[in-house]
Length: 497
Image 1 (tube, one colour):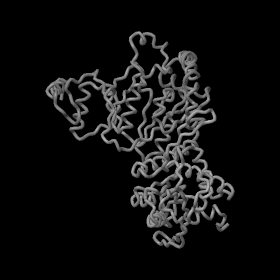
Image 2 (tube, one colour; image 1 turned 135 degrees about the vertical axis):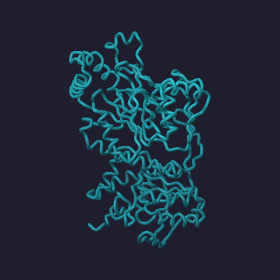
Image 3 (spheres, one colour; image 1 turned 90 degrees about the vertical axis):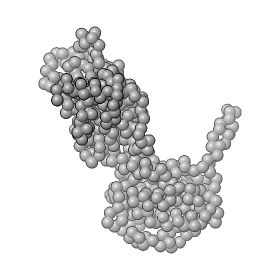
Image 4 (spheres, helix red, strand yellow; image 1 turned 45 degrees about the horizontal axis):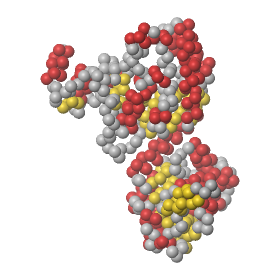
């Protein structure tokens, strides 16, 4: 089909809808990016957004590539800040060697924000491909581009990426589970930072970055070494000192040596996998709450999961994690407004703690959580439930001692491990039989297996579960993996050793 025939067909198709494209009044100046962000599915899972920043030639791309390679079973897209450079004006083109490409004003942050908003709301986007020869991009498809897109869709060929079609000069990016945003200045604007779930700064020595830049620009771009050094001293280094390095303080993780630091990247990927698993279950069950994970919390989990950890360390760091879970659980209790007079004579309107409260520990592991609850709630009553477990299904209630007025109280059920969910279901069923409303029960634990979460949340949708981490699953012996072993034995020192 010749180009004239294509154009005639486009003209004949004006005002007709094809595959979601409306060709009426379509021109190169019509901005796809300026359309309001709306989501076709408001309940769709939000992607996990990772920002990777650092100086030019610090190894950001290598780090991104290694993360993507290890997350091979996830849908991952990479968005590069370089795609959002402003088109240079004729005057700027005349003095292109005096133009500072490392300055925040060189980027169209508004365009980047709009693209990221659409991806976060589950919408595909067209991302420009910036041409460093003409110093321009083409984010707005022409009528011919739209026709080709329509033609491919009508032919049952779905265009995943426009990189295979250089005449289009745009990249089609579809929504994914993970979005990696890479660029030297992605931490500079607070609106962009706020979109990120994780911020990584690649910290590489200035001499190494300069050496890489010289090698890249002279070999790959054919530039004179004098020109490279002149640009570095005039623009690159001052911009790094003034704009890029100050954003290092916003990073959650700093990776020294970039892509050479395999240990750091492995830890990051493990953390991402954990967050993705938690994210999925929290979207399915609105009554599941996972406390915000930090590397401090991750570090404590690492210590108590280590089979070689001493009893002292296991108890110490378990207590710290338990306290965090208890504090988070208390935040879900009902409160009443309470004004007080401060020492300055002013009125402070705060809240009053829930008075009708009790704890119930599932013996014996649950007893490890009692001290943290008592430390947070002075004089709290604590009941006991003992359930004998054997394998997956053998559950037998052995003993229970609960406050006589438990039906009038908010109940914090304590058990550090949620595995199959069978013991938890029996304990919760007992509480409900005692007259406790399901919505008055908050189940606190350190780690939860997906099976247990499914079983409890489906059966008791008004109960709340608060945990610090979601596990991978259960092994053939119905033990949580990776888990932390028999918690009660390790905590109370009654294991075999």
